[in-house]
Each structure stands twice: as C-alpha cells, then as structure tokens.
Image (cartoon, rainbow, N blue to C red; front, top):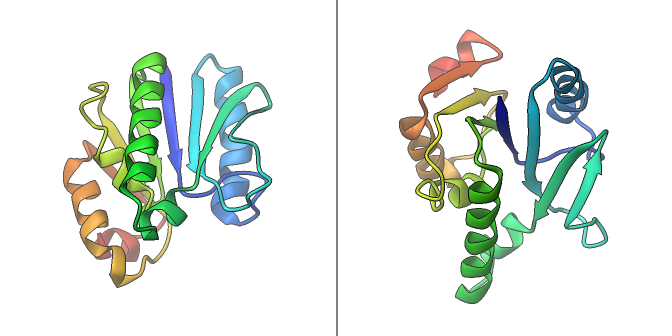
Length: 153
C-alpha cells in the first residue's frame, strides 16, 4: 500500500506529532507500506527533497506562500504537489494534523483520486477554520488523539 503522509511539520522539527511520525513511518515501512511525506518547509536551509530512513520527504514553503501576495508562487506549489501526487499514485492520503498547508492538498484533490484519513492531534487557530472544515468534509475517515479533539472537529 502506498501512503502519502501529508503533515504540517516533519522531522527534524521536534514536537509530539513529529516524533510520532518519525517512529511510525519507518515501522510501517518495514511492514511493507510505502510512504512519501509532504511537509511544510519552515527553515530556508532545509532541503526541498530528502530521504528520512529511506522515505522520500518533500518540503514546501506552504505558510510563507499562503501569506504572500504573489499568485505565481501559489500556482508553482500547486503544480509541484499535483505532479507528486500523480507520480506517487497513493492508495491513501493520510493528513497528519490539520493546518494551513491543507489548502494545497484541497487544491490538488483531482490530481490523483485516493481516500483520505485525517488525524487530529491538537488545537488549530480560528484563522484557518475554513480550511480545516473543508479538509474534514473531504475526508473519508477522521480520527483523533482524544474525544475532545474529535468533538471540536
């Protein structure tokens, strides 16, 4: 099974979600699952493409481009994400925590048809409520780390 792991942040950024993913993905890879990670690029020196324990990781400056006023940046990211989804052809898209980067997932849902699983881990700010609601509506499954988080979603 091919899984596109869509995450707002990923290793080496350190936090609970990142540590969980850093252990979870290699463990499932050893069991035969094939992963590709799409994550936000927070540090300008971070590589756009890298491998983490044999798993391809692609980073995009989602947050910076969403707040920028240049449409060409948004179009370029959308095109690159579309190409990645088409080339990888995942059987499942796992959105690991909701956030602003989900805008680009939603904008490329027609690139490759695959069911989506959303895992809710924590709070999100009200500024991205529309993106979160659209992401949850488009999901085939929604799971959470607690009943309170699921109630918010």
